[in-house]
Length: 500
Ligand code: FAD
Ligand code: 2HG
Ligand code: ZN
Image (cartoon, rainbow, N blue to C red):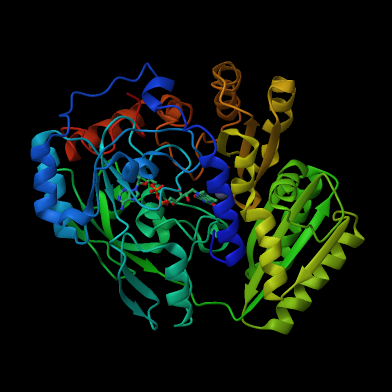
């Protein structure tokens, strides 16, 4: 996200658009039922300790300097922290946490602040621990494909550094220009290529993390195989900063493909998406590296707000299918043959295939920039749901019927290959009555269909009351026990993930 000049310009216009708007309501006012925990309030003495540790420049406490760190990407929540700390080393993180634990100061870890569930910003006045200055690549081994780096490295910068060694990151997402690898690991981010490379529980070989009491846990193994005892690294993958602060990671990176092609299809029905996906798995086999879908509303939003152009006519549904491999001619032939087949059988009405980098980027933008474009609609009720594949799109017509003219737009898009749909409901401004019409209804439907109420974005601040729709009480109790053991004073990212 926001890597090229055009994207940077677009970000500037989005910032201008939002700065002309009023700030989002404070979380404490929008959610008055949530009470501030019994934490200390930041004092001059606390600040002095941080300044002595980090120096004046790495401690922000002017309210205007802290503002962007208090507001989440989609402007759905806002804290009022007056302290942002920017450590550069694991030892500094350890000293900050041990001090905060001792003095009962709550802490909110933050990476690129692109999280979509309100987990990355404080709910009240928690100290913000930003990893932005922990951004060194420690090593890249081009034989084993092992990357060791600090948690604050930006995903896209890692991608570039690996590319120079013939390697690539196993994950790719629209936020790559801003999100940081520690944030990716802490949310167990999925993204556009999970279908091919799997999730971070498989790709992360090692993690270094700091517990709430400042203890450093070194699980920084670079080995592919290491079955010595419990696999502690998994505690930090996807725990959204509630069990520890990730300071370094080791990732197993695949070889960068030498041939890459992309197809964009228009389809008449959701059933045809399912049949096309099934055919793609069979006919593209080992070269299939991404399989995404978007509906007409999702394409319209990027066309309307970002003025992007579609390479094909209008249809109710679209698919983006990427192949990557090592033999350009072979891969291209395979994809073209596949396109001819699915068009010949009437599954795909129109389609285009390209391997030109500029054209591929333009197609990816249609899919990757939906999140950004939707924000121009106003306020977003955002849902990230896993469903059995046959039910993948079933929530969208139900929500359209339920909300009628209350919604400006209801769109569905996502990772069809992984059974993960993003349902976005936009309205001009946040309305409590609309929220009540959507929740818990949307979660009840998801649960009835045996889906997950959070497929890849996590639970964060907005979903703890609904975690029971996807987890049994015994599992939730075990999570609470783990939390108590690892962070007995509950200073790490309170009000997040677990029901309070
Ligand atoms: P942040 O937003 O800063 O933090 C996210 C959570 O992790 C918070 O709970 C925070 O407290 C915690 N955290 C951050 N760093 C650390 C650390 N070092 N140690 C401990 N806890 C930490 N997500 C997907 O899964 N798939 C997608 O395809 C996808 N696409 C996106 C596209 C766009 C345009 C946007 C805006 C977001 C998208 N996301 C996606 C969501 C988001 O980008 C991911 O969740 C990402 O992994 C967050 O990384 P971050 O550095 O921004 O973390
Ligand atoms: C994506 O797949 C992201 O584009 C963001 O996970 C989804 O904004 C969303 O709802
Ligand atoms: Zn996604």
